[in-house]
Image (tube, helix red, strand yellow):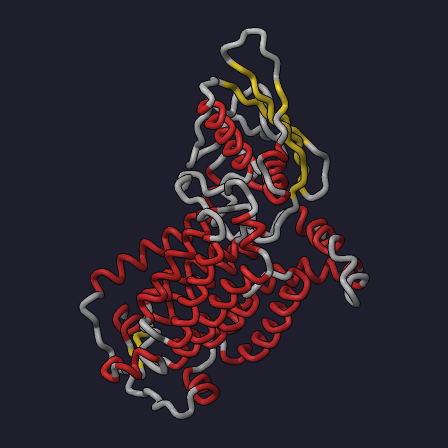
Length: 440
């Protein structure tokens, strides 16, 4: 049974077309980040970046180095698109994108994580075996088929993403339209649609359409009778997201996934009429089966487990943020607040708390980050500690903060009597200096 499901060979037109779309989009992401100023604002302007904790060694290249870094990523994206040295180009892009992803979280986005996962998967898939420069240079690489697992692994990954995104929305502030109302309020000045987006019925529509779309879109695309309708709805949904939320390539990447859901015959007819269509459907168990199946099992166990880890950490993830990342908790809440940091010289018994001027250290984006996110507050405290240690000063660092979720009452987030410079970061459980509230 498992051999039939995973190793039946099917026509590879869908994967080849997706490689072209994917290469174009990741190239656009890279060059676009330069042209829109994202690289400058996020990686060049700041004195340092808030990397993922544990990845302190990842800091931006000096000077204009990050422009060259992203330009190189763009080149690799183009090489993926045209299929030149496909495997190495895809692996190189994956490594570079992973560097960017773990290097900073001022612009954290679940879609960036999805792109990283897709890059890893695409590095393993035989997407360069047709309509590529590689095949032009070496015709022996040409293949018109692929094992079915190449499609299944993408579909299962997407199903996990969309399902968790839907379930995460089942909480009071989403269901009572608070999140939709707040999201649209910041877009009131949009031309033409700004006023329309403030209507209550729009908020109701966004709330329940968001839940149902994420929950049902994969099953509806898989079912032949609903596939075309689901695809049309998907076009509306992703174009709406692109226009209203301006989230880069990801709406278009989501639409590109559709090639894996339509029949092999249709994709071949629409995109690759001149290509020979593979119909043998032979089963060929490869030598790498003993490696592939355990790897897929571990991969999907991790993908299923990470989004539920917050249930095993005390406190509400919406408040504490512990277990929020890598969990497909997309556009679920708005955070606002303020934070003040205070330095105390431990060697001076009469020393008073001295307030830190955050503007000397942080960009505007980073100021917002340390005003609302406990991990960023801890990291900033550690950076201040290091600076003072370099001056041969032993200091304690205290934080006063108040944070509001979804526009509700502001509350103290960090215990103001805890020296953040002296506590370690707990990766897998709660950090006790984050104050939690019953019913939060």
